[in-house]
Length: 270
Image 1: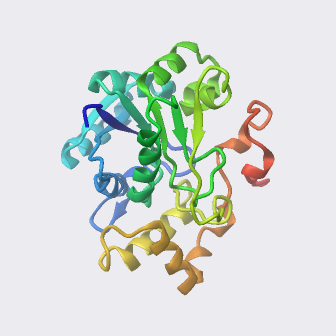
Image 2 (image 1 turned 45 degrees about the horizontal axis):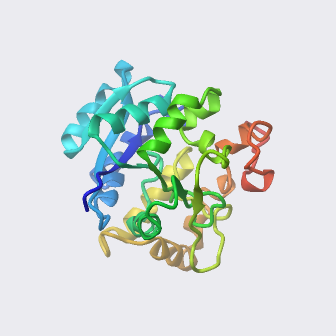
């Protein structure tokens, strides 16, 4: 394929709820390394770049990128949109994927599925995701955009949430971009009931259990493998069940016209 595909994995050590979460151990490697391992299983063999900040606390992530053998870009701590864009410029990307570093259970088959849709409809879309609406379990986030789309977004976005979360300007301006969405072919929607992402200690315990149960049986275990495991051992799903549906949208419902209260869960104690 002549087009250069880049996955940008934004990562930093200063997570508010679970500091240093991307460097937590997971079967002898860091959580970040395990996530990169899964992304490298994509049939498209994209370049993968860890994009972190220039904050000294994130020096460890540059070292980890070198250890893993992937590229690293360092930029603004708080303007993640700019960091994402400059990382793509550095690589000379044509197609850019945003996949957050809090998705260590991401299924590479889902990444491929979204990319398949994008390339089967080449020239028809500026941006494709599996998030609007989301149907797969939380933690399988894939957003694909053209370099033109990312460049325009970086030039025009001004609100704090747009700079922090990279792509909201795109979803909020369908008149400016050709936007598409891919849903789970099963017809199911587990986006609010199943949580495969990491933001809390309970998420980490859940992810560890999944890896311990599945990794040595089937290295490239799938989303369906995890769901089957949870059916067989519902106690594992209960580890972080109280946070199912909790995401960053809950803080910005009054600012996002494309997100409804049904797409998030508010924890009143926080």
